[in-house]
Length: 108
Image 1 (cartoon, rainbow, N blue to C red):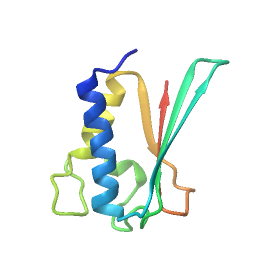
Image 2: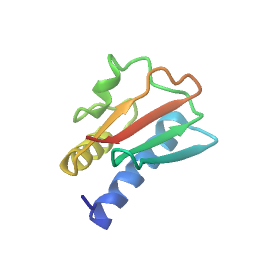
Image 3: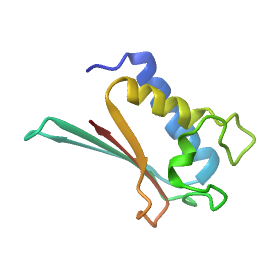
Image 4: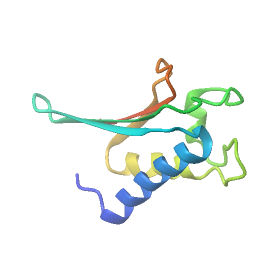
């Protein structure tokens, strides 16, 4: 399934802006892995910032509408999840990643 260029831009912009605003990293990286065996796409989006805010109850909560630890609207990661789900992708936080914050996007 192909993304619309506009929605792809929204996803990428929200992920980058969220990293900059919340985690204050020095580096943001994207790793893309396409498995030719089962046509699965995996995108890892990670930074070397502060990591998951301790005020967030569960890692899944950051994708809920209105959840924020800044003065933002709490809609960025919520919209990212909605768009990705629309195109058959899941997004999750890698809670075992200890050197910052890591999101994993995978085709279903």
